[in-house]
Length: 291
Image 1 (cartoon, rainbow, N blue to C red):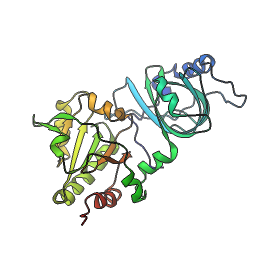
Image 2: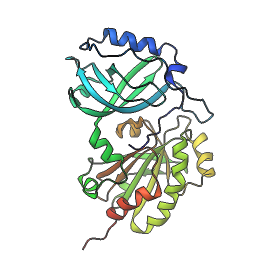
Image 3: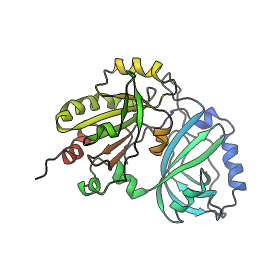
Image 4: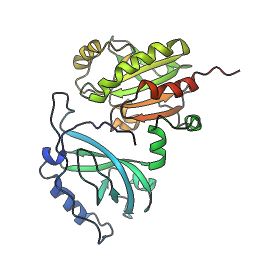
């Protein structure tokens, strides 16, 4: 599986000393079916190190693969047998609170899923489920071209302010292949992929490809603009208003990149940093001239 960059490298177990207690209390009170082989949640989550580029400390996001063991009738919780959640906790089976009851309808006992969690202070919620095979197809640079044709739904319209004060909307880019990248200045993998995107923008500009970056930093232009100058970002940088990122699944993991075809259909979603070599096949396909 492609490595997915999370929004913070500091372990919540370290930052929030009561998180482990919270997990145990949640297990006791969630009403889920008890499993005799369910281990006690480990309190030796991997230690991370804080840095000046860390995400805001009040909200952390993590993701992993899991098998669904059970879902409560009310749809409030699901017991997941999950793999290692990097930077958060070891592999184990435990209940998780679901952010919305609608999430329960997306899964059933026995399903293999990729799930994303949000940690705010001592509260942990699952905020999204994706079938494991679908997630792997979306994030694999070697996915078959038929997967690119299948599509992931229509792209949500947006209009945001750019660093120069102008506005840019998806409608303005009609007829182009759009690479929509959600990123943040504190995200290390984001910094690594921006030079790749600069190269791709130059390579594919005359074939109707337009890269667009949406910066998620809460501080806005004051921090994004000098960063964009430093990295010489060669494509429009927009400032998220909170609504656009939420419309595109909330960007629980950054960077996240969407490839949108000329008809406005999302053809691929990449979670984690994307390389020049990974993008070339799908861009070639989406910009191919058909007779």
